[in-house]
Image: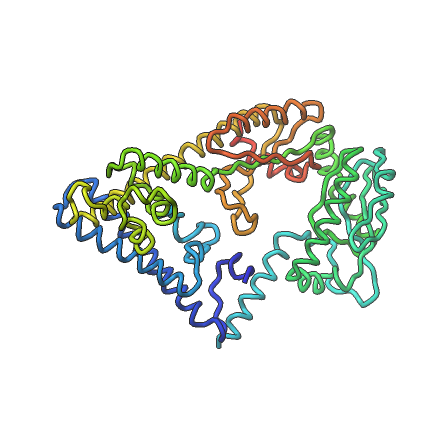
Length: 99
Length: 354
């Protein structure tokens, strides 16, 4: 366990294969979610969206974030677990401000 | 398939420390059982007397530490079993964290004891020689480097300073503060929408101000601003998504601002301390998962300080810690100059501090 977290390595093991796969999938989804959120915030700042578009995008992102939290909790994963250590490149995901 | 993959991964880690953490020279390929090797802790000047301090200190495997003198240098050594410390044994043992930490502790114990009375150059963890002859050859080969390093480090100690962006504590305080503001004013302003509000509204008493529905909603949808569900808030029931974006934007800006402040602060700390130091070594920030620290490590530096300036240095750290705004400082030392033995490291990073 501690070894796994220290290296941030995805190890496949018969007993934990489902959780580990889920972790990998959620990591990818989380990366996309963060990118979309950033992009959405940038576009809101630029002001090139209608209120309705902002509302729809915000709602989608909010629901996605809630759903992510639910899924993480179901598989007993913390926000920090959904990250990969890319060695010299640092972590895959930047630390997120707490919701 | 999956098993062979995980095996590959394990051997991968076993090799890493061998390449980086060990001195390859003098390391025997393999030794027969029962044989002993010489574990070397540090190198000092022959004229210096560390012997008294070492009598009371047990080395690795609790074996007594002695000095091997050669060409004006003295190496602190103790015998270790070849089965554990030859190349093959060591590679296997590097996976064994409790064993490794025992060795590291013994290593540090010996170096610390010796450095109390004289200047020593700590060697890398698990520097092993086959016998005294091998050790003497190594001392002879690196005689000049050891000599100049001893000249450079004589009378100096190393202080370690770490700075952490105190995010956890600060975040909590802000969350509480926001809750109070909300209770007093009850408006849906942008500050009110920061992260803590939803949480404190759901669990604490302050949620009452958001209406009776506020607390149950708060727990069901933590991302939702407590104000939007309350009756009598600005009537924009259809703007949940926009509220969410605004809130996330504010959280991001706030966090970035806090990081910028912490980085500025860490830079100021470093510049102030570097002015009192003869050498500076910036280590990579510590991994929170290894240190167990929740807060982000924004500075992890070692300073080479003259012994007589140490009290000035530590009191300056104290002053900085008092004034630290959003940054927590941690001082360790005085250490033997672990980070400054190699000249390259000093040259490589010294520039950053000046």
